[in-house]
Length: 67
Image (cartoon, rainbow, N blue to C red; front, side):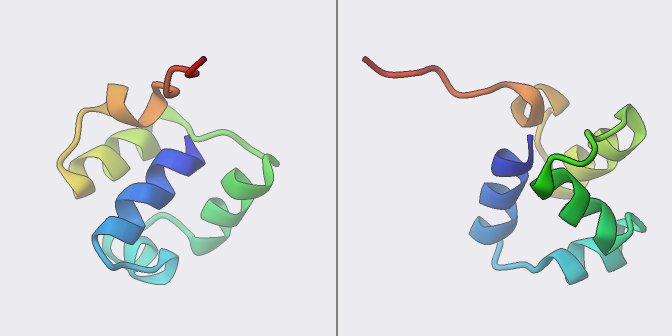
């Protein structure tokens, strides 16, 4: 999930700090997701999806492997 979040964040030209400030999700939470120390809970997935204007499924669906 973090990979997809990072793609959306980068495409929007944002930082974890800005997303954290706008959504109320602590910046440390993003670090935990990136490091694999925790997985996002549904409430945070909904906040991220709404923030970027994408369906939750887009955040949790892993890309298909090619080849």
